[in-house]
Length: 399
Image 1 (cartoon, rainbow, N blue to C red):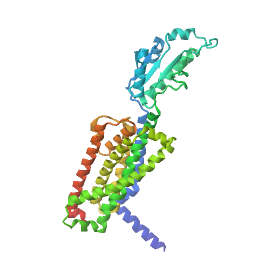
Image 2 (cartoon, rainbow, N blue to C red):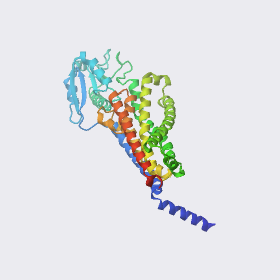
Image 3 (cartoon, helix red, strand yellow):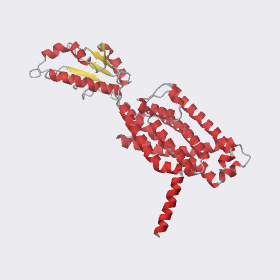
Image 4 (tube, helix red, strand yellow):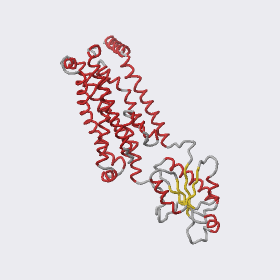
């Protein structure tokens, strides 16, 4: 019995070693994918909270005294101070809310004189208060707020607490000087999660069906029977891709629906709150992007499956594209937001991730959405023509 076990084990090991594709996909690929995925995710996470070293923080100030401006002008702080009138505060606050600038500082009039005259022990009035307004969903604003509050806090201690920073006021009754709305906060969270999950769900649905429908039929011989009929090979290719895409999209939609209904629990909100921010139009746009992305994955995997000799080999060919899907799903995170330049949307899969991010972050650009759909459909048509050419090659189909 011992000899039998050893012989079988030896032959099994030899078989795996001789099958280089299987050896690579089973032994090397998992560790390589995990290393690359975690390395990329770590890089993306660092980029999310990183501000370029040459970036100048845009700070708008009302009644800023010379003493405070000198404090914020220290080398290395990279603060560009813009003095504005109180009448311009509403405009700057709107820019902050729209994530177009970084910080708004509102000092009381005659700040230095008021602070000098204020006695924190005997005074019956509130200490002069500096308002530091920011939008924490914008990385630059979040960082600028920390830097300015740290500097002002040190200044505050040096003056023995003669003024306050972000004390409760009528404009900010809880002392929260953050112009990020609930919608902004949810959009920031969903902007990181939704594109990655959507892309992975669509890819998984496509990979489940495409190899079995092409390579599986090739293995069983049923594909060869179909190809000996008078039917046009490219017509067969288009029909195969569309039929696989329908069921792959249905499978992906099932996963997406489950994700949508689990989002409220994951984010700690009610389903009603989620529907307050997103409309049926957003849902239709998501479906349109999901449909075109499914076509891309199905057509690509169909070509790989037609070239492969078996379902196992097709799966091995398709596995590295999982990494591509993950990287593309994190595209907007890596770029620090959704870009508006059209050339970003000329790259299949990558454009889908950016379009998904734009929908969930309320930053939809119809032109870029149209480019995404057009490019994805064109890529799928090209893959269908390639698949038709493969079907016309007896050397590949009947190998």
